[in-house]
Image (cartoon, rainbow, N blue to C red; front, side, top):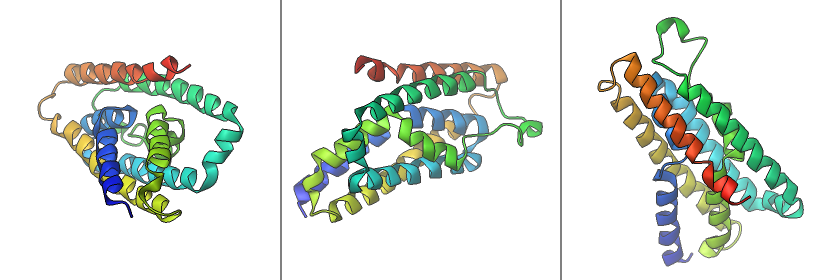
Length: 200
C-alpha cells in the first residue's frame, strides 16, 4: 500500500466530508429541528449509503455511467430537482411539536441512503476517490480501503454536523428564530446547486 497516497486520500476525505454540502446542511437543520437522537437514522443513511456507493462504483458500476453518459445527466437534474424540494421543506420547517412526531420527522435511513445517488457533491467525492486515489493499493483492496475510510470519516463528519445543529437548540429558542435559521439553511442548500448548473 502506498502510504503517502493513503494519507493524501485521508486528507481529501476529511476536507470533502466536513465542508458544507447538501448532506451537512440538512443534518444541521435536522439537529436543530428534531434533535440528535431523532436524526440518527438520517446520519446512518448518509454514512452507510455513501460507503456503499463508493464500493459499488469502485467495483464496476462506474463503467455503466461511462457507457451511458445520459444516466449521469438524468441523475444530476433529478438530484437538483429533489434538492429544490428539500430546500422548500426545510424553509417551511419550524420546531417539531409532540403532536407532529408521527406525521413529520427527519429524513429516514433509506431516504438518506438513496439521496446519495443524486447528490452532486457526493458524485464529486466518489469520482475523485475512485480515480485520483486508485493506486492506494492493488484492486480490489484499494476499494475496500476507500470504502472503510469513507465510512469512518463520513460517520464523524455527519455526527459533528448533527450535534452542531442540536447545540443550537438552547440558543435558537423561539419558533421565529428556528424558522429563520431553517430558511437560511434552505438558501444554502439551493446555493449548493450552483456547481451543478455551472457544469451543464
